[in-house]
Length: 505
Image (cartoon, rainbow, N blue to C red; front, side):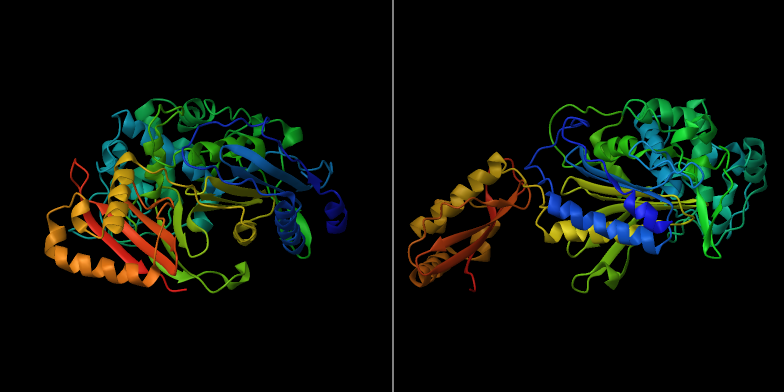
């Protein structure tokens, strides 16, 4: 069967016209990977599908608001043998939490929710809860968003609560739950906590959380095939979920839409989900201009903030490349990684009876990758990471180039004037500069450097670190000068830091 499915691999390349740029961004656009890079990516996922015994798989790559590559593999279900396409519907499990979190933040923006208010203000059934210690703080909405409410990690149990009726969930809330820790002491993943956020949305918005999210987030983004009730979806487009057991596929039972859908109930297609990824990536970088989305760009960027109980661990060596230690923190429905090769990665996985999924966003590059699979807990996380590393190695994932602000341009011009004149007095200085190194010392330093490297045209561009700071490198007659310039936090342009050094060859 897997060999037959390998032959059914179908490329569904989508050009620039199929998915228009949803939201503009400043800075240089990321390079669209070439076909060779896509071929390497396709092979990575094909190998994973074969080795992991996955009946159906789809994955896509989004660059600067466009779905530039999408590929379906295998079949939607073993009976009909319909091939997976970019319109096939998969449940994405815990990747659903991102919709719940952004809906909470939207209500926050509207003044209807305060994140640091006790959650019991919006869910009355929580008011009688017995806290784990006498000095425990009450659980806030922020605690629920960042998995810091003190609840026990509940993946084995929570995944099966999808079907729970609302009335039963009300009774559960009224009864209270035991705690693993006092609120606010650490991050421990809680599906129960996100189900509670769904109840907050319903209570505050006065409509079912499913309807609020669909009406205020999914519909404005054109995600017309995305929702929570799988039985209302076109059945001929559904990817049926399977478990690999005793060397064969066993069909997982379909789970109806229930109270816990806020933590994992979304069903979507690659074409629809690409719109969601493009929208999220549009939040970066911060810039001028009107907001075009259903929430503000600044609100999108809130998803990477949280209590930030950071941890560190070695990257899976199977990803390839040199050994790399990653720092990880949990924001609001997203894990935020600092990777030595890829930089900032904003990611989440989904695991569910019959399904597995992963999404990785590189917000500083304008690139996202996602994949859905129809096998229980079959999230191709390592494959997605390996695909990004392969694209990075091919030079296809450059960081966005920051623009040079007018203030930085003025500061850089002052730095060049100092070098050419040999006099620090040629620049507007902040009060700390003469105290850090006096004019005579600057004159001696500049003379020594100029004697070593000779003439420097100093016409290379400054490379911004921020709107206030930049680094530069000048090719000179007998070497290279590397430097740094930084403005002081004053309205007028004054230098608080300036350095020149001969760069080692």
